[in-house]
Length: 221
Length: 221
DNA sequence: CAAATTATTTAAGTATACTTAACTTTACTC
DNA sequence: GAGTAAAGTTAAGTATACTTAAATAATTTG
Ligand SMILES: [Mn+2]
Ligand SMILES: [Mn+2]
Ligand SMILES: [Mn+2]
Ligand SMILES: [Mn+2]
Image 1 (cartoon, each protein chain N blue to C red):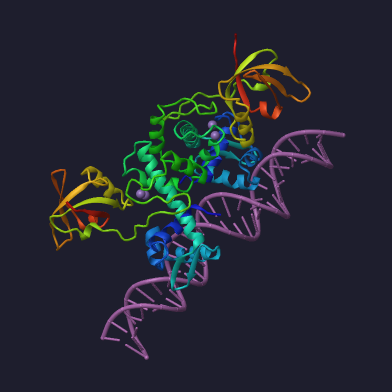
Image 2: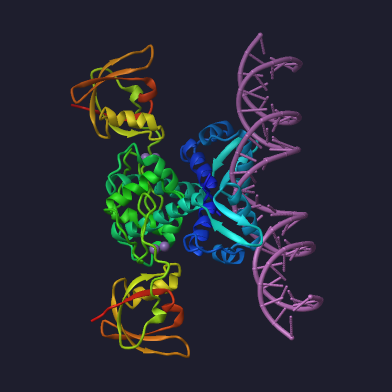
């Protein structure tokens, strides 16, 4: 049976392993899931025993197709819920992640397919993350352009944000720094990695902490 | 912390105790929750230790205000979800109970209040059950008229159905026996408790098993 | 390459939520 | 009111999912 814990472990393994390419370490998983490294060892043995992952002691964890399937199904539920809560219930994009984090574990495939249909089979969630379809297929985004790589005097638009940090999301909402919004990089400060940008004619200073959670696309005039 | 199990125990204790009037027996709870009587004893001690219920060994269980509050909050979430899934997502009334049974445990107060607002603070769920408001207040329906008490040649309408049985709900949908639908009692068969009724000019035989899960109001011509 | 450091696992223990089997209490019946 | 049946609890054991502390493996470094 797929418990809430198992689903969260598999989602984390899948995400940290960037699909299935990289081996995932106990330490990184423990950090991601806020549990002890001992807990990881135990759960890893159990998940391996059930064919969800490949686990070589002291070497690392690799997701197997059975685990990948479950992880993607949970991610699909998460992102469809986020979009549904924004589009159909009027929540803002900084309010939906925590709700989806819970809802993703108590939604049947029947219900999520109804939601998918209701939203007309969307491709992207409110944070720019791709939504897997019923078969688990979706655009992969493991290497799109980070805001860190922006250069001065060029225009960009946000294509994706990392939605896990509550305060970060609230700040973005506050300064109206939304998805697909255009901005110009005014100045890049090398010593602290921060960036001065202009949105809607207003200038903002964004710390490195903020920009490393934002992904962009250059707008060629 | 309020786990899913605890919430289900408290909901069952509240329902079987009809609010708080009746003492709830271990046997009835075990039957309702599909667990052993031993499991009830154990959980009862734990819930009593945490002030949710009053538990006297060998005597029975009585819900306390703290437990009542949690139970009503879960019931509120359940019924609002049911109505939301019917009204906003177009599911049918026989598809929503099982979904709500899961969603009720992973919905924050913030989200359920948004859903409540979106539905314009409804008073009744798709099965005729009253929806508690934010403060936990709602019309109590512990003793409305059962379909068993119907008499021949009178007209009635359905005010509430017991939504727990899947097959039962599916059958009602099939014969278009919906909420607020009018029907006439043609014949009452004493020996097996069944009833012959007419809906939309079509006659149906309903077994005792069915009619004891339906509650009605007489329509005085 | 041996020593130190870091990463990871194992061991032992806890809490929740179940089970079956044995035992105790209460209720019913003659 | 004793005997029995039913209702309920206790005891012992299991699975999941955690913890901290101790042990071990792998990696880094002088
Ligand atoms: Mn999210
Ligand atoms: Mn998202
Ligand atoms: Mn229901
Ligand atoms: Mn209902």
